Image (cartoon, rainbow, N blue to C red; front, side, top):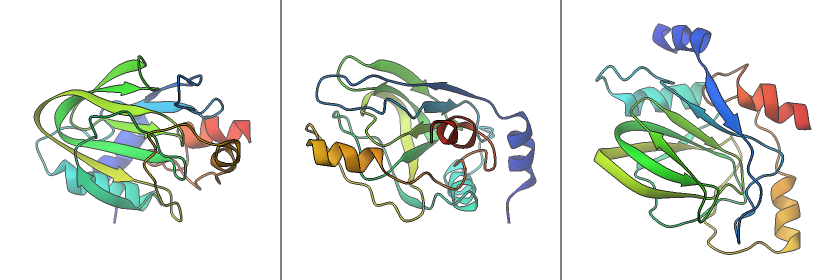
Length: 180
């Protein structure tokens, strides 16, 4: 059962979305937007790890791990990913070497379409992140360029049925499905 605080946050939820061109060996995703949800779950000092897991599960993005963010450039070619910041804060490079740096705080979530490079640049506090992926997608870790066949397979990944944070609205519904 979803907590009423989620419903309130969904009503006023907002996000910043942007697309990224390929950079070096990182393909990024030319069609699907990266999104940053500020205060996806209000940072009230409660157990944000459990709250993110419940939210992602409710929206059909089963959580698969709790940890930090790798401090080396990588991307996933076989799954879209959402990261929920449960504790600590992080500066994350998005888009590959020399990419855009974003700051994540407790309660923030980051949606990364397949192919989007990311790397932890710095963190403060006890950084804890929940990682989740659309039902049926299994993530890989790539640190090198894709072959043309792998790139085509990445670009053909199915769209998730809902947004990981906002459910029936949000960037997956409002932007990703618009490019289909």
